[in-house]
Length: 318
Ligand SMILES: [Zn+2]
Image 1 (cartoon, rainbow, N blue to C red):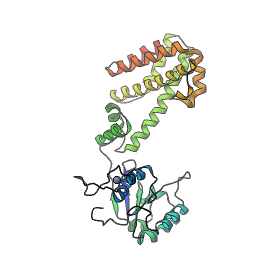
Image 2: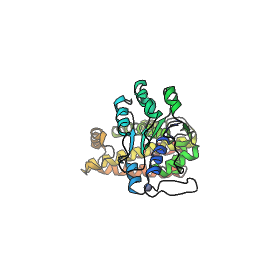
Image 3: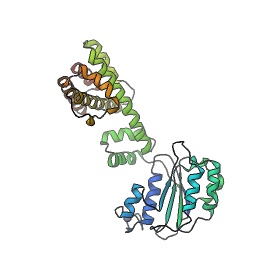
């Protein structure tokens, strides 16, 4: 970029979720930034703040086009014909038009073939960046026309750092998530959202049982629903914390419904009907007391109390 000798077509290849597309967008910004900066690492880098950089980040710059699979999961030949047409013209306002084809392997053979001629002799003012985590699925003729920039997996520390900095994780959560993510931020975020769904289901089952069941033995049995699962002690602690936070969020919602509060504030709006049913047993007073108990349980967990003891205690307080 600094020497203005970027190949007009290239392939960014490597594992999913390590930042290939982000890098492609960063390249588009560096090319078209109105006030490029020099850093220790890069002779030419984007400022990140000018109107051009901001519009590229928001996906609304007229000269930076991102093609990606639609609902069908594939990239259609029409999508590629459209960008090929547009790439024949001078950029509207940028220095060079950048066409990013994300998950390029999702284009069928005919669609890829449609690109070949353009990749061979790209219009001088355009740059084509193909992004793929399964580059072997691309046609050999496409591969041979695109110099490959290889991406590797990130280190666990890099994944954890990004989760803290960009996604609001605590240090502990980030390290636990990164340990199991194969060097991919995308995978860490995905497993987090799977965990959250699972945690909310477990929390809801517990609340539905405690709503109608006061037998202490039965309740201690329910505590297992909160602690169940395998893993290292740190993972067990982390998993219980995630489930307790889900439980707290559900109780807060039930409290809103029980006290006829503003339903626009519900965190679990998709469960409104089930929450309403819970509010028959969890009236305003009980849901507030239960929420406070969950809060105390989380504090105890933070102070290294045993997950099993915390769950047993909490189940008797709900
Ligand atoms: Zn800029």
